[in-house]
Image (cartoon, rainbow, N blue to C red):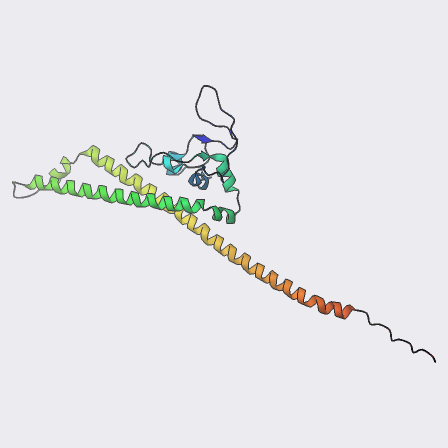
Length: 234
């Protein structure tokens, strides 16, 4: 279940919601992937948002993407918590980078993309073998093949299901690739910002050093000269 930002658990039960202590994105049992993947602000939800977002939750649990499918990756071994996700979202970029949750999410998405690619390639090869076998059986014992007869013998339900799986895999791959590209863009922006900050700090340090070096000279110049001593009369 997902705990809301208010700290109230929305798990079912006859006793009603239970007040729980707010969780932090620094807690070891909090899911870093959920913290890094918040819902978008666009009106039309993405495929992942429509599939993996629990009711009332503000993030996407990646382990819910393939629930009840052959590609099910199992339950999330960590706790998903909206307060922890919002805390992570409010952190400065350098702290997010230090925690590395977005990098973890990018690597997980890349792994899933590769799995989708392998599944699509496997299904295409399976379909190719089935069509080739059907063509061989159809043309055996006759002098010519009949491609129209072959198409009639294809199981329409299986073909529709295969096409649906391929289309869904393509949508997943496209959406995940877009997110990975966005994360890589954030890394580039952060590196540029760090470079600018380093240059500004270098300039400030140089100015401070020049100021410190000039201070002793100014003190010597401002030191009042003593009046000449009068000679004593004999």
